[in-house]
Length: 289
Image: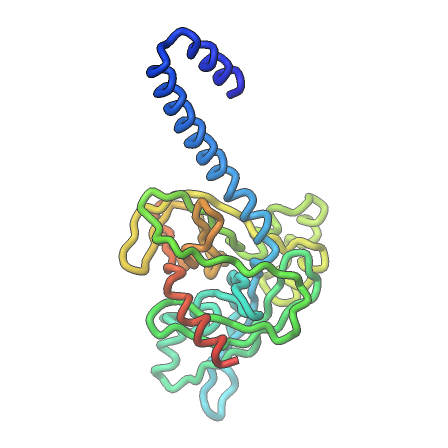
């Protein structure tokens, strides 16, 4: 870039004053555009490194019971969440309330089953101890929820910034989350650790062991927005089970949405909910505190 500017300045000696002034203006515009492009390329990396430790792995169990009977179904769940403000973690409703839109659970509920969440725990990168969380707000229209940490947070978490700009089709996006849960984290582990933990199933005990070994670490994937339909975002950044509830970043390092799921068999069909729909939930949870 320095060599190019030197050549341009040398060429300016051979053009008229009026032409030189116009040439200088064009060079300045080009320089500003290149600087903006460079900043846009660097922003996702800076944002991901800054906010990675504020993206947690959520695990829990829920059950559906019938009167005078033992639980007929107990299910483990896992997903992703991220810190927003005032000790709040944003995630999907189907993580905070796992029977939400779950066909098997809804069938049992129609038969008289009563669903209940047994526990919900969050693990943050670099922190060995789990954090108990409690659901404090559920969206009635979208797959969104907020849970609150049950301890005085001394985790030095960054609250992820929610974008005030409307995203556009074709915009670059980055996802942070835990695709494939423990299996996905295990795949990134050193060989000796992977061999020792390969037999572990997705459970709270396994998550505790992973946290003790500092293996709780979200993965980042990248892509572009393919479509925007109301509050629904469609993008091609790879995702999988376990990454639900993770933040979707724009090129400015701001959260434009919450990862929700994907269209099975279509690599460009990852789905998210606009972060605009999260803001009223945060206001509701903050007022209720």
